[in-house]
Length: 294
Image (cartoon, rainbow, N blue to C red; front, side, top):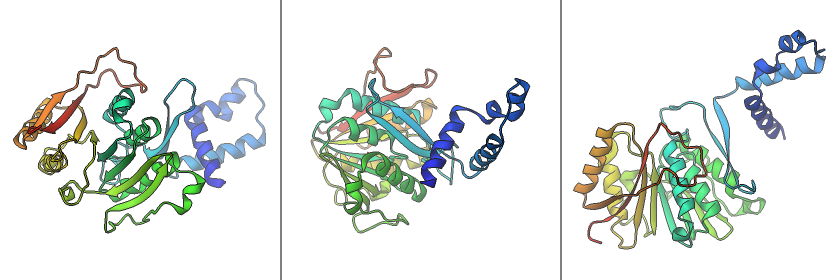
């Protein structure tokens, strides 16, 4: 109960900043301030200093029946990683999945670099998949990812159906969490890209990844992982890349081509309907990848 109250109070703080609730401001307007307000104001101020995590909320339809809540870091870089913060490309990729729900229906999906889980949670909630496997490799990211998956996709009946490794060390099959959301099998995996081989990962229909193209030192491992996943004839990869540096993006595309991967940039009309408030000043390219032998 205390955790729920704290979450509500933090959400209230985000909606109504402390400066708007200041007794000095209220008194200057001739409003009498009761003792309870001073007491609760002190409590709220103490909660603000506890941690740098926040909850973001996304409403995916006009009826407000589908809502996602994500725990993430306030900071772009936290605990030595960018994976604790949601990014534009994850929103753009989630938007693509929503627009292609029929293509994804009853399919098996693996996501690389899932971060806090926005793309995957959106897709599981709205696309009637057969299975969805989230994956990452940073301990703090995996812990937060498991929390977000359980928060949005589990039910009270799942308490005996999932397995969560608290210290997020790798298990025999790398699986940290396994639940079922309606008819979709959901898993969270500790999966470094270097561990993605034809023998360690089973065949899937789609591979998804968002905002994984920012550090050229990771391109060899990422492209080798994609090549191994696309070895299967039916597998397609959809990669969303925020265009921050054209040279970095071109280097990634060049590396992909060296691994004999066919690249097609998906035309995303600027006037398309969107479920997210995507920044207008940040370009996101989406690519469809397949083995060049197909």
